[in-house]
Image (cartoon, rainbow, N blue to C red; front, side, top):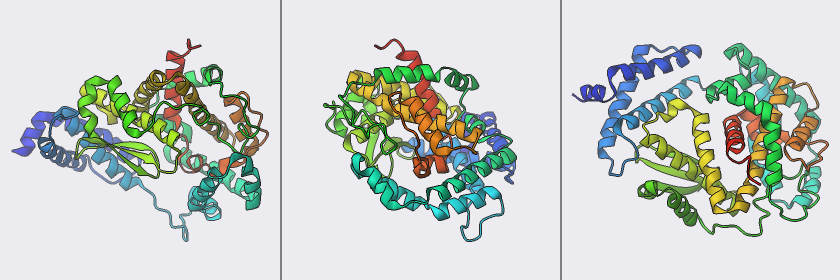
Amino acid sequence: MRIVKIRMMLSKELIRKIASEYYQKYQKEGVNITLSQLIKKAEISAQKAENNYLKLKPPKTSSEEIYLIYWIREALDKDFARRTLITIDYKNPPPEPYFQALVEYFSLLPLELIRKLNQEINNTPPIDRKKLWESFNFPVKEVENKFIRLILTRRDYFLKKKQLSPLEASLKQFKIPRRSYQRFLQDRDEVIKLCNRLLPDTGKMPTWFYSEFNLPCFVCRLTKFPLKDFKQAIDFVFQKYPCFSVFKPKVKIKMGEATFVKYEKITDSFLITIDKYANFRHQLVGLIHELSHVINLLKDFQNRIDVLQKGKYFQERGAVKIELSLLKALSENLFRASLSKILLTFWRVIFEIDLYKNPNQDIERLYAYTFNLCFRKANQKRNRFYILNERILTAPFSTLPHTIAYFEIVQKNFSSTQ
């Protein structure tokens, strides 16, 4: 009787349609699973979802249908990730050149050491960071050679396994429209100039501000900051979106290793994790971004949108539009200062695009050159700190959806801002 009721809610055709969509993904990765098995998994997830939905206390963030679809997709996403995850034994890595290159790089420079070095550098006053770096006596040339081999083998691996470059694979994975990416390539300089022009006047910059030993942040240089605590930020956001204020108690906050938000389907709530290592201003700006995701998800749920099917870019674009409007309403100076974060996002992606086009080049010079493209007052000659950028090393183009989203929203909504 329960299965019959589920099929009336979602219909047998819809469950089969979702399962068939995932079946194509499994097939492309060579996973041995039948369509019937995936349909069964989807039906079991739907049954669990329906049982849980009936237990939820109002107000509920979505209709039962959207809730069930979200539960099914999340379950299949997790199963797909588990089945396609490749575990590498550092003592006996697979013969694939890409995996060999990964082991070689992280044997010389383990992730734990990268994180420790970044933390030590960030906790040192910028004016003293050059001296600190020199004290490490770092084998830069050896690391650079292994880095280039890592990028070359990763590019070849993607082309062989997916018949796509890492960039093309990311456009597909995040469901970024080709026309949006092409507009970014065509008009990025225009938006970069706009962001530079709108950055707030925070006085004379110290000599280290645009150096390779610092990530320029205008938020930290503001003389006044409009928020005093997390509660004030949450109250402000829901005051701006009063139609969702009934869901404010469903927002929970905890401290952790990074800043992100997760929709907790069991409790129908939103858990925001805040980076415990960030300074207070960065924590609050990060909270505004994650609260923007919460508002955007609530909007999509209410509009009966299948958000996981739409993809990462769709989610980021909606959240970014809310985030920038919130910052502008909160403080004009804070909005303008936040553009430095957008420029840093542009920098990483522009660097990665040029890097994967030609890994056999002077990487230090490229990293400096692309930084100067984004920060027009900078004049870096060389920058070796790409070797400590964990995202560039482990998750190529992971910020591509954020970059394209910020580009489109700034270009469309703030080009007339003076």
